[in-house]
Length: 78
Image 1 (cartoon, rainbow, N blue to C red):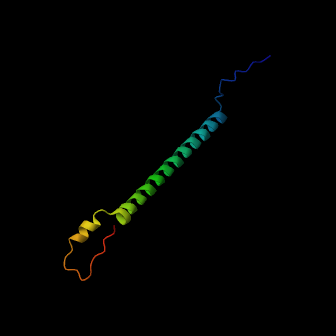
Image 2: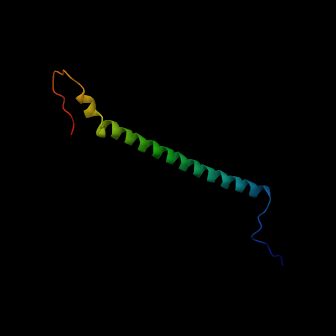
Image 3: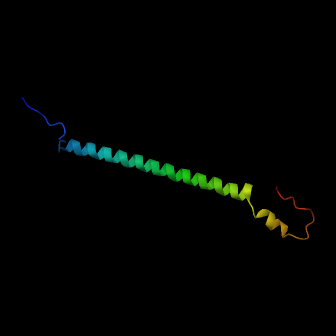
């Protein structure tokens, strides 16, 4: 009767290929998650910049108050 040790991994070329495939899949999943993180950070930054420049813009009223001699009154957003 032959008893096989289940915990022992074979050292043949098949196991090296399998380990390579597993390692490559881990790197691909890590790479995908890093790209996803980079895209999320870029989108959040773009939304923040658009909000600050187009909606919030605290310096617009100050800039427009320095203007003198205008033909028409300047409407300042509230």
